[in-house]
Amino acid sequence: MTTPDPQSPRPDASRPEARDRIYRSPAGIAGGVLLLLLVGWLGFDALVSGHGRTPWLALAGLILIVPVVAAFTLRPAVYANEDRLRVRNPLRVIVLPWGKVASLRSHYSNEVIDTSGTKYQLWAVPVSLRARKKAARQQQQGGRGREGRTSQFGLSGFGRGAATDAPSRPETDQIMDDLRELAEARATAESAQGEVTVRWAYEVMGPALAGLVVLVILLATS
Image (cartoon, rainbow, N blue to C red):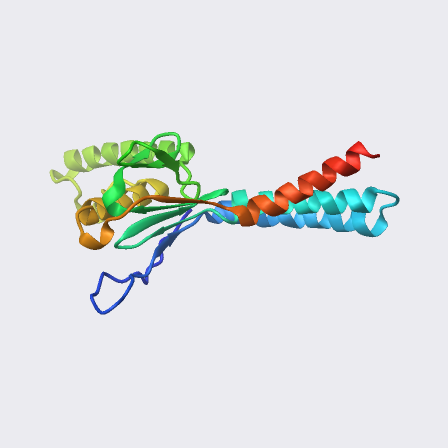
């Protein structure tokens, strides 16, 4: 679902800043592209063939809808390096030095909690309950398979089954494990200290608000 950048190096004093491991949701990106194509096709058709106020309404709708769809599908990403975790959510960008990360929690959503207790959701690493149930079933089946091999051969994991004994985990849970390991390893590093910063995504909110205002005006004066 989400994949880290395999080229991320370990910290090196000769480098001013370590490269990020980047986590994104391919399913979210694919869904966003499809939605944008659909919205673009409908909007373009209304602009070209519409009459009266229809083209203007279509234009205002595009200005409103396109940034919102892009923000919630294409924009989310999580960047992690040796010094900090940067969370790019639909409407905010949160930068947390590892020294300020208290925990990374997975339940119905994946969240990072800073030392003040503030929670930030990781939009780019969504929880898949279906994947968790599938992994649990595979683990149960693997356990029964190991029991069968033990009774038949007298040695658990004998033969070809040994390569599949390790229980599988959903990919997003593995990502959270990696982030927890990095947070624990770097929590006390001098370069991983600092303050948590939060920046609103005005580049998304501005166009969407402008489109909404124009749309409301057009509808109110129709």
